[in-house]
Length: 528
Image (cartoon, rainbow, N blue to C red):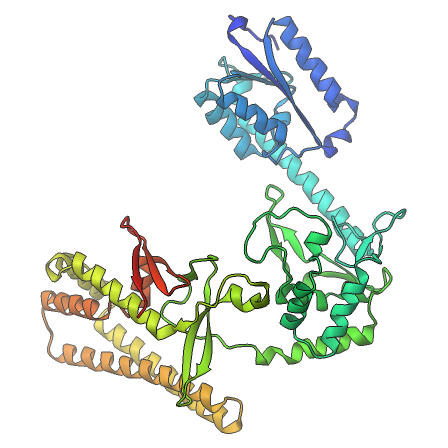
């Protein structure tokens, strides 16, 4: 195609070249040198000024975070470049959505003229080639998808043969010096792995093992491999109980190749999704074991035996929205007995819990009720200053009309009665579990109290609906009742709290910082 450039002196051209490993299979015509030669001939023919040549060698067309491409975008943003030239459209990219974004939106918005030599595409003029560009982009995307499927199939086949195809072997192993896709024991790291298994076999918990490793300044697997730390935080560079647990359950240490634990969500994305254990690819006896099978099995039994002793999950009003102000991680709760033998929940910093001896963060210990009461008080204060029954009446009337339209009285009564019946059956089953010893007295009392209160509330609601059915009240009076109920319960309604509060932060000196979702500045108060 003949390209017409009326005023070539007005253009500052960027020559963009991309080559991926898949492109190399198509022959030398796709080489970097061939592409550059073609582009240079074009600019010389049209007397164009070249700002720079941007090359991405070995980069997939579905990835637009390529260093050369991003450098070119930076020069476009700096007004250094107003023309981009590629050999063909697939050099720009093989993701039709992002390719279309740059061609149809980004380049025009930044007054950049795009030319694809072999496709005859020139955004500076109207042409038939431009009209079919979206279809070319789709075909390039389909090609990338097909290549991805083939590569995935080849990798899966290698996994089933027991060949290692990962980037780095698990801690304690390294790549074979001469044989491809094979791993051997790393004699420098292997003693640490064996020590971890020996400590677990002696009865130490994962947390105790992690504490010992941190105290003796044993480098973590990431530090040992000299991997860069992406997100620095209080846990960076420290062993954790989760890391130890994962290591102790890895069959790689008994000579089995374990792969396919995660898969990419899409050929266009770098994100991975964890796979269930039944989808892992496990091939036995592919490399020298680091620990004996008997030792490994004994450790599995010890790890599994502790599962039922792990702390239970507790429900509390601020669950999921309360954080440590110093380290930024969510606060946990622990159950402790007071002098009367009653269960009392305390907020504690999880970072401090996990890495106490490492001196990371501080305890932040305080009664859950103390913090919750202080937050409730502040929320009530804010709501009462901003809301009044008069302001709420129009919204309440609309809510009453909508509720009666989509959920008539009879339907609500049947639904509530059904919930009451389910709770009763649940309570009966709990009582049987307690008699048979499945449920402890403490857990029975705690769960029984909560479910009983829920059933009482449902009974009261059902009775109120029955009375209203017998003596109907006006929609306005019903709306006023709804407003009063809202105002009475606004500090105990979890749904309301989470809609008002983005997060609550507890500082080391027991101050509370409430960050509301509205534009108001954070409220700070002291927990009594």
